[in-house]
Length: 218
Image 1 (cartoon, rainbow, N blue to C red):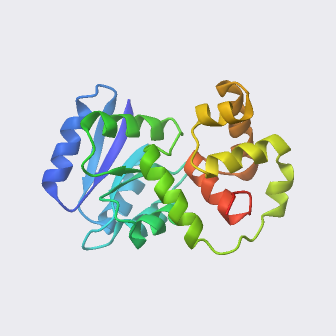
Image 2: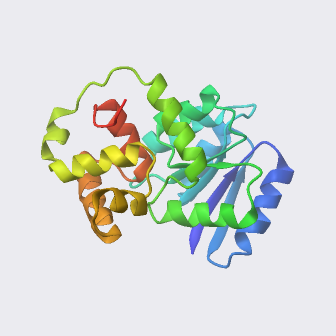
């Protein structure tokens, strides 16, 4: 059972998400919070696998809450799914830099929310291809010149660097496989090894690392 915490200042939104997620059968909503500060305390106590995080809330925004939840976690931190209207505001990019694992639109279809939670629980991230590509493009534009993590980058093979670069362009595993004329399973294997080497837990944070370390195309 995937444990989820909902964070949104609107009770009707939380109630709707709870109904949608718990109807899936393999997801349990273990807690709700109406502010970022409350979310931090609740996440520490409940330790959910996934947190659906609103980005604009009174009493502590989602950006600050995401950063604190990730940095203060005991053991593996939860995967944070940023729920946004997606107007490319600073909250979205702040959440990305703070360790968010994925994004989804607030007006998404019920099955999209369920699939997003499942993907994040499985460590996949990058849940909405269209949203992700726009996020990546804007993040690339806003990110300053990279300061290379030489130690981590040196551990990567040429193929791993190539695949991370394609991932940073917003390509899916299937698209990367087609680009390189290899199997999708091979892409997954290379990505898994690369993520372990650079110390990131999901695909989205791999993209962040790529831009910060000059591996991504600019």
